[in-house]
Length: 389
Image (cartoon, rainbow, N blue to C red; front, side, top):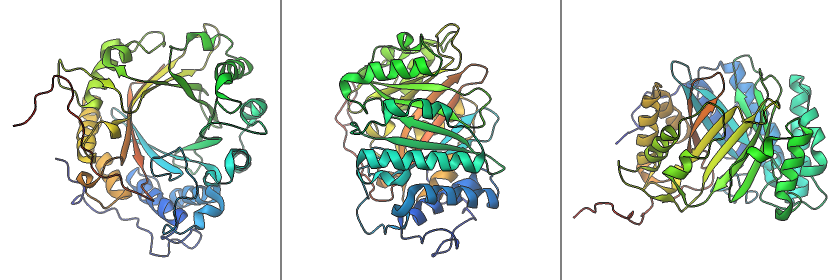
């Protein structure tokens, strides 16, 4: 079993009151900013960049950043199981340092979807002014995703891919059900058309629902438009057939990732029946209408007894793809002091991404757990599994 408790300590620890410009450690902002500062050190980012990114995080959260953690979560945010409006992730490629990302819900998701949407738009436009990038793609879709009386589980999320130099890559996640569940397909089809991908919708795989439409904003070599789909009761074989990306990945690779992330032995089969698997297709060109990227996500937190098992699976997958798990273990220690065996959900998703012109990458999603640690799970036996005496 992997033990993160005795790994070398991370040096960049905030004082109890936090840096002068950040909220105190007993608040939502202080807690998540402290986690981000320590993660930045693990990822090799300098202190000045880390402090700037932590300040951006707390500013984007708005007044809820000052909210004491002794109070309940400020909203029932869909972003995490305990409703913390912040999540971290690390993307690993062979021979490269991992890329650190933070996903947040601007304004903490408070005040209902309409208010949350306005907070999100203000936050993204403030980031655009700070880092001098255009919000034209987002502005083009405002009427589709920000109606007067929105529906669905979220309004807008914003992700920052943190880089040296203090200027991140920015992504926004939008809710296709904003104008009603019955209009999801029409909303996504029209959004793709406006963004220059009129054929893209017809290439998507059949799914149980479309969860998000995401946009790259700012300093991207090739900006993407991404569509996330959810697939209930998904089997390994069905997962292998989800990709619509030209030239791969091979279905057997996705099946093998599915089995490793879900904890299945060779020859054993099951379906993701507790929480759906997710597929993401990325579009960068309109000539063929085909996606140039495909990512498959396994919600590992619902298919483990505890986070020790999730870390074992994540580490095995990283080694398989030529990445060193050491920085993942240091990142877990930077986020929490609890034993992995004492809860489940710290490792939320494991994902495998294939993007044209890049090697495969494995992404590990790490929960902040500001409000609650899910206890270890007692999972029902899988059909055909050998039971211990």
